[in-house]
Image (cartoon, rainbow, N blue to C red; front, side, top):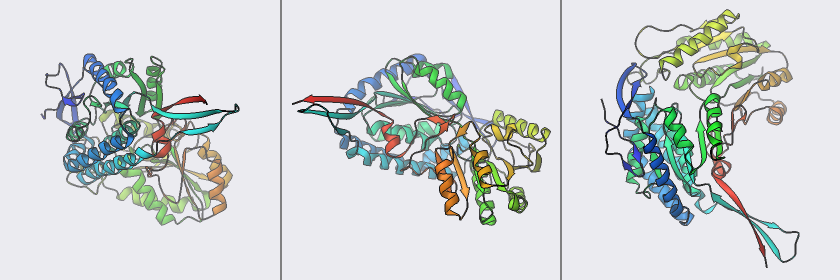
Length: 474
């Protein structure tokens, strides 16, 4: 077993944990680490330290906060390989992909450091002579950050970087599936010499997470997770009327028009659907194909999905890796079986492989209908439902007829149809002739049950602020 310690108020805890949480390698199913479960006292202490640190941090010139983020980015870069090793073991990613995630976090941290001179307010004309209205942007205070298992380092940076540059302090709960990379990340925080108490990173039970999020000093809770988790966070927010920022479920529709290059579409769909075993919020889950090219694209996808290998990526980095845990595999397979019972055809995949680990093959389903569970509910795995359509208006209606509205994709060379989709699609993002990549200068925000608020860019950074109107009589 590898020893790990919670990072509380700028220091690794010295006292032994009363209880621990087992961490499994999803490629083998075996426990490789036991991490400490923070107590209620631990998280309340961390929140108190964060509240004290934030009072001084917010008063620093923003450029000094930016310099601190640059130091942290440099420290992450120095530790990227070690962070990547931990992430690969706990997530099933290849070492290259895991290390690249840490490096991408470095770039995101540096991006947010550049906002130091750009967090601006407004001067507004008053209706009263000799009076000026000024709208100022101010930090919220202490932000509780709840991190998912699928991209745990990138998402951690995605939340703490804008929080810190705008003058907040953070308390972080990583996923219990992927906590060891968060502790490796904490070593970089220590190296960066940030103010004591400004950042805490702790593993904990759900009940202790509730205690942390409802501590009186917490003014904002940011989560990337499921709809059910988002509903729980909204309950937490009631305690302090805390501000929520939620990126929740997705069910990305892809519309394929007859003028699309089907070879390119098939290759891109395969890569998007099998990246991290389909455990991506914006991964394609519904493929709407114009009827005249439906069979031709289905043939290409059947060949591509059948050829995709699954294996432990520590020894076979080009293969598709495992799901996060056994419960995820059981849930996904049960959804496929119900789709089969409802009349879907399993073109390839759809079986649980023998051997260790939480693997599930790329699974292609044809004959799907809009009302099926496999089309209505998020799978979050390597399963794709294919549905034919006749007219473009029908495709837009089907894509938008959904509880989720995170990302969407359109393949066409017709600019009129592209603009029609850009004006009508019910989703926070539309990607045309490419798949989602969440550019960090954009704004990643979902409609409907896909979330509240958003991440990235200027608008994501401003999520971590509140306003003060100053009315100056002169």
